[in-house]
Amino acid sequence: MPSGRTHDRLTLWFLPVVAAGSWLISRQSDVSLVLSGSYLFAGLMFGPDLDVRSRQSQRWGPLRWIWLPYRRCLRHRSWFSHGPILGTVGRVLYLGLWLLLFLLLIEGAIALVQGGNWNGLSDRLGQHQQWFWTGLSTRPDLGLGALLGLELGAMSHSLSDWVGSTWKRWRRSPRKTARQRPVASRSSRT
Image: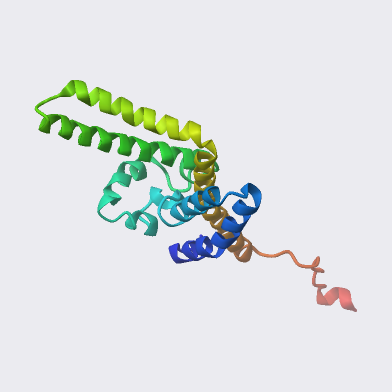
């Protein structure tokens, strides 16, 4: 399994390939920028190794504690963390729950400051929801680019883990060379 430094290098080395490939396919600079940015984010901060204490989890700084429940619930290298699509979707949903909780706390604090105007709270939450869905329906290509970039960043990590582990197993296993001839005993050489 490659080190965190190796994962970072691979992410940075392949960033130009991802950026050029996304631009050649979409021919839209904003889609390419979103896809490349989410690839970089996934490779450095939002990848599969959030299920252990890693460079990725440490990069969250004072917010790294939000990944503790995630880490406790998942076994390292499980399909729910390192698996294609499932791992990325799981992390997106997990982070989305934290963002929703944060939004509820902020809007609740605003309602308290406004003298307990809880009716306005539901209106503001509805506005946030409408803003999110309007943005997503207006530019679905950007949403798809973000999700694809997150998946590419996660898969570059998981594939390098798989290749590294396979290489180490191959190097440790006894290699079968040409069929070895049995050594003849002295008595049969006469």
